[in-house]
Image (cartoon, rainbow, N blue to C red; front, top):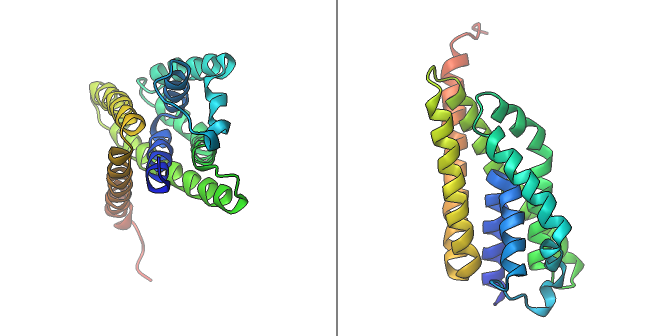
Length: 198
């Protein structure tokens, strides 16, 4: 895998971890443990994800997140708690993927991975807060299930096809930016009218 492909995989996994961190850690670790993903020599740091303890803890987190994310308002509390966890997790995943034994690349991948995870986390948390405001209870479950399916499918594509990983990263980043802009406009409309004139 070349540098561009590695960056694509790192970006995709980081962006997806902003939605579902535990799923990304668990699926990536399981893929490596079963031999689905062959690690080049310079990615030895990522092998820790295949550790049974890491898989077990990620699996517990995955199950907890799966159910917490389906319950109205509990999903927003879960997102609030994970505002620190997901970006750090995305940063560490990116750093492990891109680690070329060069401190400069480690810092760059850590910062970009954390920023990417924070971007998608912000879009997800904001969107889910808007969905929670709807009066019917089913939209929350539908959106959460859609996120589960999308994350699983996109993660599979990113891990098995480095070129697809680059495309996925670009689409996710653009989609997250658009979602945040739309959420910001919506909030301005809701709360902008209550401002007193200067």
